[in-house]
Image 1 (cartoon, rainbow, N blue to C red):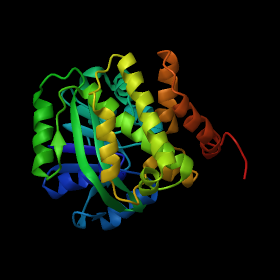
Image 2 (spheres, one colour):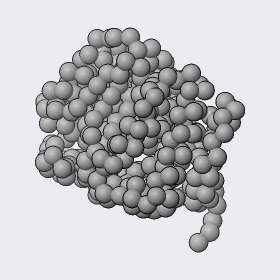
Image 3 (cartoon, helix red, strand yellow):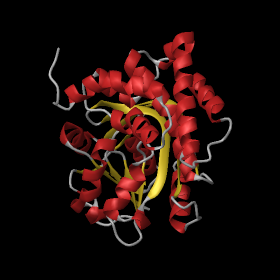
Length: 312
């Protein structure tokens, strides 16, 4: 398949590198020092599953340099989705699918507004991976898996082809029977871990070990579960139990991108994570007080990172 990785960050960059390693025709879209390093030295991946480098790597900052593709895997931050959707027009033909990997439950609808609903899949990734240095990704582990499906859950040839490509690359992949339930299950997990990690600035090993922070993790999950049901999403009864089991399976030092961005004073995905839980809770008349606490505490730091507040 001809595949474009739009936003060569920790998750999409890792999956794209694995696909390229397996022989798929992969083009990487990046910017700045990261792009220049990939163009000069290839895309290096330090991975718990073995280090490797894609060299030479087909990398550019301009989608028009690539032309039409079979699939676009979207790896930008949630607050960059609309800009990316407008920029990816040269990549899209009638049969192109767009697979977003952002954590959240609103991205597919946002993409559909720009590129058209017929092109958009629902997708999610479970992986701990980030840009360690320009041109270099650090894949620390986690399930390192990907899941996607048509938004209406129907079988399709394009999903089957992309699934086969992922499997050939050794990427654990699944096609959920209900993609909305899968997205909300991930949302339940990541907003709890990410929110608490960002507030406490502690790795997951500490959060799950201390009874006080473990209780807050569970409260956040219960609020999201209630909210999902209120919005007609049929989450499994064991969603919270499964999420906590995942919490205990993570590396002791594990952190989320939200936490790392907040700590480093970079714009984060707070609005699409705990902020979305708060907005959707209000819209559905579902109380989400723990999400509100997390969001409100982090909001000043987020606004400072966006240049909207100034303080030491």
